[in-house]
Structures are given as structure tokens and as C-alpha cells.
Amino acid sequence: MGENAGLESPGLRVFHGSQFTPEALVEAKNGRFVSLCLPARDEATTVGPIVEAVIRDLVERVPLVDEVLVVDDGSVDATAEVGAEAGATVVAAAEVLTGCGDGGGKGEALWKALAASRGDLLAFCDADLREFDTAFVSGLLGPLLADADIGFVKGFYDRPLEGVSGTGGRVTELVARPLLALLFPDLAAVVQPLAGEFAARRAVLEQVPFVQGYGVDLGLLVDVSARFGVDALAQVDLGTRTHRNRPLDELATQALAVMRTALDRAGVHLAGVDLAPDGAAVLVRPGREALAVDGSERPPIVEVPAYRPPGPERPSERGARG
Image (tube, rainbow, N blue to C red; front, side, top):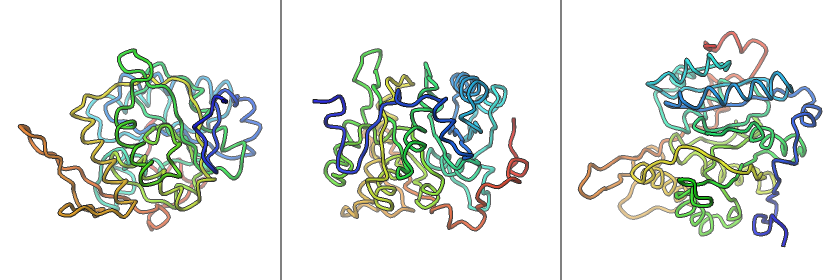
């Protein structure tokens, strides 16, 4: 059996990040603008080294990335300042598309990144990565630049937990992948459906909604597949991902958000539970305060009148810092 055995399904292509070198990808850009977007909340300790590495390796040494954008999602630490000092353009999520009302969460930051960035191709990485490798970025961009039929690329990797290989990604293995197997079997071969490392064509992301919270990654995967077909998807092996592992208390809310999104996309409505996009599911925690998990969504951004696709006038008009 080959090394990708069990990873492919009809239409879902699998690549390895090592297949793509920045030098070769630059030749394949053909004038297209590439943005790396880093949604971040209180990631002052890690965002700086990530930005510095990308600018050194993929902006200055090899001109693969044209824009490094940090979207600050309400940080109370020095995330914005550190990102700007490292060389990124920094925008506050709350200051983008202000006429669309208040919002927060990972998906909100991704949606605002789409609005604020200039790229024809966009790569996204979480800002809490340790031991960051710029091959993550080139690996994600590779399938988009190599094949015009691919519109959305999901990264996957080994995720060590406390130094033990293969033990990370608890919500992925216990919630997300079983839900895909049951409700969306065409996507069951996706290794890391909740990966924050992905890349896509702007024309694809513009046409799908964004769940504002933790359900965004699974929601994008399902919605892109439904809108463009499984054959527009690919996944790429990025090696090993080291990041901050969250405690179970935080993972419970993430799990509920993922379940809610999956059930909503499958059209499943549970008796007595409001799964409408603008309602809140409540996580009951015996002996502790209950938590409301919002399932609000942002619409496809092309439906937002205030949205302007990238143009030569954009850099000076979006109020960026850095």
C-alpha cells in the first residue's frame, strides 16, 4: 500500500508539501497576488517568529508571498504590536466591514481576513504555531498553483500531545471525523477537517458562508464541497504541527460548535434544541456555569454591499497598521 493509502476518496487528491518548492511556485504564479493571513487572539509569543520567517523566506528570499496579514481578533496582549514590528500588515477584526455589526470568534476573523486582504490566492495559518516551518505555506499553495481545477486545500499533519506523536487533535478524532463519516461520507478521508492551515482561491471563499466561531473549519469544508464538488478539494501532508494544546474545558465548547455546524449542514434538527444559525446552543456543565455556544454565520462575502474585491487602491484605504 502507498503512503497515501486510506487518504484518498473519489475526487479528493492528496499531496505532500515536499512536492512544492517556493522557487518553482514563483514561476507558476503568473502575476497572481498571494496573501498569507494569520487570524490571532492573544498570540504575542508566537505571531512574531511566524511573520519574520515568512517575510525572510517567502517574501525577501523567494517572492512567493506578496502580503502577510495579521487579523487581530480582540487581543488584550501585544499581538498587534508584535505582528507589526515583525513586518506584517495588521488589521483589527472589529474595524473591518464595520457596517455589518458586531461579531467575534475564529470564523469572524477569517471572514474579515478575506475582506481585508488583497490576494487572488489566500493561505491561512493559525498564529499559535511553535517550531513554525515556512514549508507549511508553500505546501498549502502548491496544489492551487499546480492545478487550476483545485480551489480549496486543507493541510494535515501529525499533532503531538505533550511530546507524544499521534495523540493530538482530540476534537478532530472524537467529534469531527466521526461526524463526517456519518453525515458527509464523501469527506471521510479528510485527515484534519479542523485544521487552521488551509488555502483557497478568493473566488471560492467569496461564495460560501463563514460560521463565526469554531465551527468555521468544518463548515467551509462542507460548503465548498457542496458548492464546487469534492474534486475541487485537495489535502496536503505538512509533516508535524506543534502548537498550544487546549484544556478539555475549552475543547468542550469547540466540540459543541463543530457538532452544531455539522448537524446544521446535514439538515438535522434535534427536538428541543435550536440549531438555527442565529440561535445559541447551551453547553450544560454539571457543577459549573453553563456556556452558550453561538452558531451565528456571516453570509458569502459577495452578498455584502460594502465588500470591495481587491484593487490597486486597497492598501491605503483599509486603515492598516504596520
